[in-house]
Amino acid sequence: MIKTLAKSIREYKLPSILTLIFIMGEVLIEVYIPFITADLVNSIKASAPIETVVKTGLYLGLMAVLSLCCGGIAGFTCAKASAGFAKNLRHDMFSKIQRYSFGNIDKFSSTSLVTRLTTDVTNVQQSYMMIIRTAVRSPMMFIFSIIMAYRMGGTLATTFVVVVPVLLFGLLFVARKAMPAFRRVFKKYDRLNESIEENVRGMRVVKGFSREEYEKKKFGDAADDIAGDFTKAERIVVLNAPLMQFCLYFNMVFVLTVGSYLAISSGGTKIDVGQISAMLTYGMQILMSLMMLSMIYVMITMSLESMKRICEVLREEPTLTNPQNAVSAVADGSVTFENVSFKYSKKAKRYSLENVNLNIKSGMTVGIIGGTGSGKSSLVQLIPRLYDVTDGCVKVGGRDVKEYDIKALRDSVAMVLQKNQLFSGTIKENLRWGNETATDEEIAEVCRLSQADEFISTFPDGYDTYIEQGGSNVSGGQKQRLCIARALLKKPKILILDDSTSAVDTKTDAFIRKGFKEFIPETTKFIIAQRIASVEDADLIIVMENGKIADAGTHDELLGTSQIYREVYEQQTNGGDSDEN
Image (cartoon, rainbow, N blue to C red; front, side, top):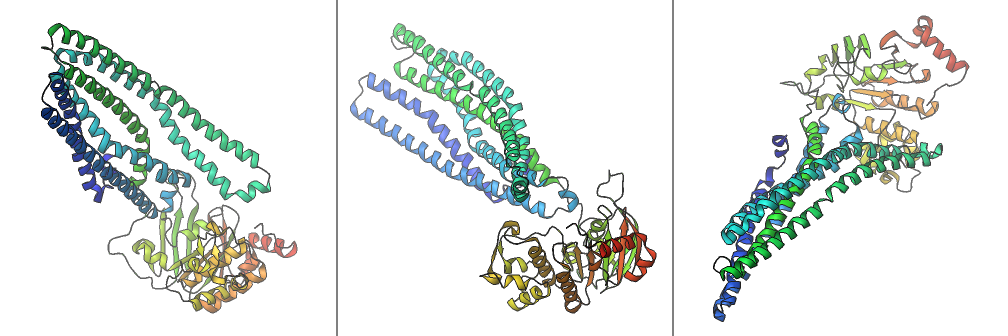
């Protein structure tokens, strides 16, 4: 896990190393300062010349300035290293997610990925900051302070034999008791974020069904659950403070009492006032070091769960990879399915598609109809290799899709889904996803073909109209037409419409299909639809049922041979358009 995370440090290795060096310098100076202070106190007590006192005081001031400089530089390099490490970590995770196939993405919920990219990375960033700074400083301070305390105080330093084990045992006990609660919290963040995402995305539904109070209660329960776990953990962690105070005051009372007795009884030969003051300072440094170590232990243990979750994302290998010597050009839009069977998971008992055989020539228009769960979407998702077949072979342009460079294959295929996605930005910026170099004239042309120009022209800013996140400021039908225009701008060899005209009227649908014939006659078109009217002019209509091709043929042929097709046709023509969308 450490090796996986360490790969994201990269160019921030130097600031990390410099932090360690300057922290070591700061610790050595801070440990040496009480030694000089003790010498200064003893000099004053011995009525040393003012020159000696001033010289020692100036030396002490110089040490303090050097310590301050080392600490300041270490703080700067530490902040740069930890923030840079977090930046690289987020970049590496996001880049890895972009390479995921749908099969990989299915393993993680979107809210879980968001939590890992935000909360979990922040936790790891804080741990890294502590590791390169506090986790070095505290052990060094503890060790050197113990050494100097024994050198300065002799037998008086035996107080630490009692205080240190008590404090160490208490801090470890507190940390171990608090950890289970902290671990539970991070798993519950996913559920809290999921509640937020669902509520924001489904705001219209929430308000339409007057479920605001229910959603508030659901969010409140998730927030209360997290708050409860944090409260339990904090109740335990807060015991650190009184334990620390007890050890601190015990050490102070012991050093002052025993030290004063030894100083008076020996006349200053065994220990003097300067050594007593140094012992108090070293005692504070030792106890504070242990306190910081306990905080490091708590923070790293808290972050351990975050580290595991981040590594799950980084170690997940894409199920789809480019072959060696990948083909970089798709010859044409022909599509062949040879004995294709498919299921979404190897553990799944049921196939989504079984024994599918098709031979589609380039330029054909293929209509696909079928009930929910019949395998329509699964069929077309195999063409751009969003998933790989379980058995059989899918060919595009006469070659197995597994032989192609994935980017080259997908650049030749355009998909328009029923649940279309627009992104924050202007209409032009959204459309240019299809072609980054498209001119304004080309954009206007595809919008006319997709029947989007008629509503774009009504906007005050026209094609420069800003689209809100998710396209929330345009209707479902407008969103579908914009996404069709985006796909047309790509000028693909294969165009897949997955129920993507469900939100437009039949007249507009007919105009869009007419535009396809005129603008992209050589493009192979797959049209998944609920309405027979959307596919009746297709060269081939496929009827899907339970993951199999029940029937295939033209509109006229299916009316005579397919009971399923005929029933749907009669229902829609005699009983009106039964499109549920």
